[in-house]
Image (cartoon, rainbow, N blue to C red; front, side):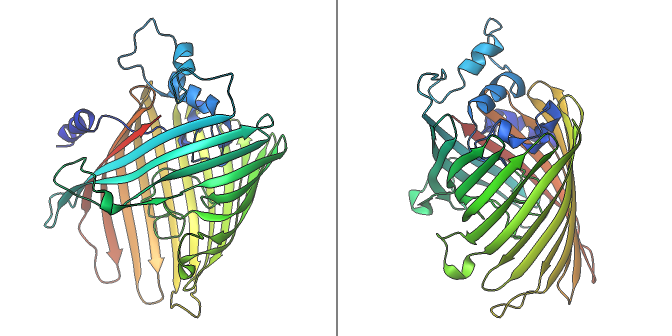
Length: 390
């Protein structure tokens, strides 16, 4: 069954958007600044990140042998060949979707395809990259499961700006960012449905307006973020606060870090603290780990009383160029003062970059919830992620 599912994923889904991942410490790149305009990752890739994705991370499916990796790097720009004369503007477009088979083998099972993102970005560079502006605009894709797998109902979408900021390189190793970005916390991974991220205010659509700085030297990389919430949301949904995050190089292939976040909304007063590490153990292989504590005592506008503990680990193994296997184990222990639940999820899958600008990710996961009263049966889910980027 799983074999058929993977074959289905390859033949049917075809491709996905390529981001850089924290797992790529296995390739010798521990800092996100190497490949991203945002020093803490996420968002558009810079010229080096695009070239790296084309000649090292991605495979060479249907690429003639006579085409060298250097040529692939030169063709990694938005219009194909990288424009070395005009370095001021760097546009990009990306699409992300996911096909979900939910509650497999159980009553109430479902199959649906979700359009998660369709964004256009423009990066404006000036003063030898000492001043950079990044502006992303796109569609808010709501849950749709029309009869056509790629059916677009524009009435289901709103326009939005997920990210926009100005970066000033104060010094070579110190950068200041002002605008709307992801909250600075923990290890940034593309799995926004992770138990540790979902509904903790640090998931896929939890960007905030604020300012943060990024500093690094030979051993340290860290930053601090002050934010006032997403000004595009109603006032009672905004989160105000600050966060801190940093990592220390214990070795060239091993980083140990910590994060702290304090935020307040109309109904919650939350703090999150975490320890995390990233380890490369051979070319293309990595192990990520994060252990965290979440506390929410509520405010006058709410009755929250959470005292939760979570941890997760993700192992990436390089099978061949562009092809990886992934194994993720997550645990989230929740205690609201009345009941205690423990949610466990195991996920196995593949991540395949058949060629530049194309990524396929297919996974199967099993989730079980244990509570004071009983434990549920395993809930099986198949996920096929589709990303395209230009």
